[in-house]
Structures are given as structure tokens and as C-alpha cells.
Length: 217
Image 1 (cartoon, rainbow, N blue to C red):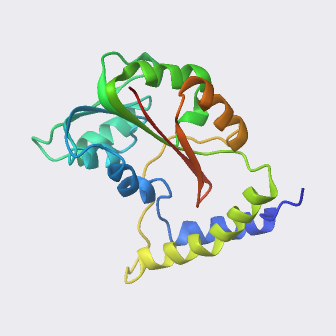
Image 2: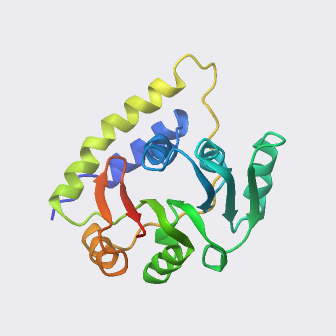
């Protein structure tokens, strides 16, 4: 299997992204909102980071709770949240949450967790009729994966340039927790999700991501 994204290409892309930063995960926030009911009572955002998605979820949920294991980034999320907004942030482990929610979201976090245990935990957190939305990372393993990654390279550069156009200085990157490469292939993720979340809809996406949507009956 030929890897289209060579180390030289990855290094060049990294330099460009440093100069023209934008958030690949935030790119999918509007897409996530369109998969959710117009209104619901409670939403949980797992791995909420600086809180952008959790704050956006207030357009759908009467109350939103964001949880992240990094105390610094939780404090930053609180600082960025307007007073009176129906969203709370707490330091905590993703798999230690309790209660039930009509919506559970998880963006770029699942590959840091034990896969089967995490999906089982999210399933239990959902109220009947609730919706789980995951945006995750996977390990490229097929020619199609590498081709999709190659297509994303010029689009990534174009979006970085457009989103920073007109700025006298590049936008500073969002505060994020340390990351690690995904170890599971898309096929492995799809197979595991089919066992744990029957009927889940998965799809490869641009910018080295996949999406998973599941509704609990």
C-alpha cells in the first residue's frame, strides 16, 4: 500500500497550518447540530475542550454539560462562556459520567478511550430516543483512505487561507489537550459499532475524520 501523505508532505502541511490555523473538529459542529432534535432537555459533550461545541449545543438543549479531563482547558471553557448561558463545565473522566441525556456528543476523543467500553458507556447515558453523535479519527489503511487524505490536503490549505484572510496576524490555535494517533482502522471501528450500536450510521469524512450517528430506541 502506497502512503500518499509522505513525511515531507505532512511536514509542509504542518508548517502551513501553523501559519494559517483552523480547527478541523469545529468544522463539523454545524453538521452535528443538524443531526440533533430541534429541542431537547439535556445534552452531554464528552471531551468538551474549550467549550465551543457545548456552547453551540445550547441552540438545541435546555441544559448542556461539558466534561474534560484537563483542568486548564475546563477553566478556559468557563472563561469563554457568557454569564447565564445554560451550560456547565466540569473536570472529569469521560467514562465516569452518570445520569441520562437526550444528546451525547464526542468529538476527536474516542480514539483516546477503550473503544468498546466507551461506546457502551455512551449508550447507557442516552435516554430512550436519544441521539449519539461521534466525530472521530481513524488510521488510514486502504487505498481509498489515502486518496481521501490526499484530497483533503489542498482543501485543508484552502480553508486555512480563507479563514485567516484579512487578518494582520494568524488566528491563534485553540487550546487543546495532547493528542495521539488513532490506532483503529475505519473497518475495525465500523465492525465494533455494529456490534455495540446496531443501526449506527458511519461514514468517512474529509480532514481525516469519520462520523457516527446512533439513535437509541
